[in-house]
Image (cartoon, rainbow, N blue to C red; front, side, top):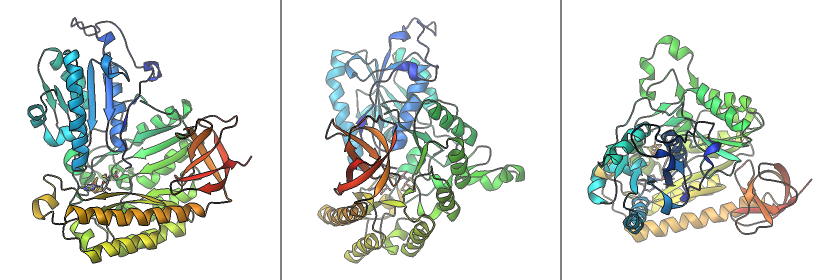
Length: 488
Ligand code: SAH
Ligand code: F3S
């Protein structure tokens, strides 16, 4: 899943599927909830941004309306990320900013949600004195009760992980949306247990969401004029609905439940047919779980974008084994070859980690040679950050010096930039279908959108509007962007 850090902008509560109730004192507890304002900030992966929309929905029923102005907030929620130490440091630094605001407005309550909440639990209350509430990713339905505890002057914690929770029936409040693209969550948790990764501990075991509720959400987005849906999960290809429950318990299900189960290839087709006018994307795929049936579903439906984010993490089979990745270098290449055969113009991106324990210069060269062979369109690259309680932290020494990790990271970034530019140059003179997302950040006179392969395309404004599909002839490019003019 692609990570980013932005503030969630304010929204119009009336956008929210008619479920916002702003009656005065609706619980009869003397607290005027109609006037309560919620400010949410999200960090980390797309799933956190999607979860914040679920949180806003749950709290809207409790009388909260969202605001983008932190000073007027009664409740501030930070939806946090634990994936690397730096992500946690960013949140801790941000929390210190709230000291001053809270001094000016002592009634303001501060809650920490997401992966840091789950990882640190009530320790966070001791470590960060201004935090009033700690809520893990599976406990958001409990927020109205937890807020009640705050109202009664207590601190509140719920970090219980669930076997079933998928928030299937919650209609997200589309926070900070561009009105064009939306996330739809399809699985929660991860069972892969990559040895470096904290996610299985913070988000729990893998479970899938009822496909009917996914289709309903997609239809609703279509009716609201959205044009693009990204199906979200830590490991989307592992999606398996058999009536509810953990993925690992599928074998124990009844024959009838197994016979009527829905896998990811089927789900993709169901969504593609349900909303034929919308672009469908998905993230993230793990190599060991991606089968040819998924590739064929992508190839079969024009509205499923020819783009796969396929993290690999290392080019060395020795390191992949230590990472507990479930695929080696050769298996990864075989998958890449099948993708290129079944979906010839497929965009492919990656995640890569440098400096995993014991990584040698030879391992690093193998990562570079893997990149040379695949020639990714883009990638998200990191140096290894040891995470508490993971297998790697418990059993391996974090033995690669920081400057070596950083130098290797720099090597792979340089190589990726070279490949991105080479790939972008192949589009010069060609016509791309672009879905306009909004005004270019660099120029008010230009639109910004993406090609099906997920490359950013910028072109001069005419009489189009965000949400339009237009054909753009590509004239120049940079490593990250294609630039052109409308072709028709
Ligand atoms: N399956 C998830 C992965 C989330 S983490 C998804 O939906 O994408 C995103 C990326 O962060 C991983 O693919 C990995 O490259 C990187 N990452 C995870 N743990 C890390 C660690 N301990 N140090 C450095 N990078 C890490
Ligand atoms: Fe993490 Fe590996 Fe799952 S990177 S989210 S354990 S697929």
